View (cartoon, rainbow, N blue to C red):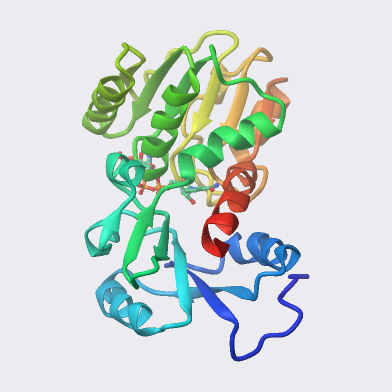
Length: 270
Ligand code: NDP
């Protein structure tokens, strides 16, 4: 059951979440009780917008004066970048936006909370990131945000393995440049090397569907590792099930959402 403002009235503000598909989004369920608890007269709703309609819909969103902003999910995170009137430096660095807020002058500014959400989610579950060696599968929007956040949190190293190796190489270079240290390196997906004590992160979309293959060879998992997901639905992916069977600690993508939702609520209600 979703907590909504005590009364939805003429002064209720609207926050959207845009994406395609949209039925899987968990932001409204997670953020509406936070708005209600804060006494904020804001309601968050899913808005189903396809890639072809993004620009048209954007103009419509801008015209809705009681819309305070919107979360952004697949496939719009990168496409939204040039549509924003301004960008927070982190969103610019990551090259993807997961939140747009209407600023006091009416302009739309793009923000990025995914990386912070992932790291906060781990820490809230009692996991240490600082000083840890990490392996991440994927180099798309979520992976880029996570790579920068791991470097900022002081993780010891990051191997990035991606189907398209060039994207992993570009990401490793960009993160090393910003971090000012030799932190990340690229590896070919499918030739992944693992070591004990690793934090292994699935930052691909593999696992959304039960018929997907594992993002990497689950036979490499041992009980010293922490296997973390970006996928929140299903809460326990086939990879996490396999990791649990092999005695590893597991960490659902749901924690990445909860790790950023309070920050987003505070940002929108400010
Ligand atoms: P992108 O499309 O930007 O990136 C997808 C990544 O998955 C790429 O690295 C891509 O590899 C890889 N990939 C896709 N299909 C395959 C395949 N068949 N075999 C191997 N690799 C594959 O998506 P996002 O980064 O935006 O999203 C990725 C996932 O993260 C989604 O499931 C999304 O729901 C989830 N997510 C969860 C969040 C949370 O709060 N829990 C927040 C943000 C995202 P390649 O580069 O070769 O194409």
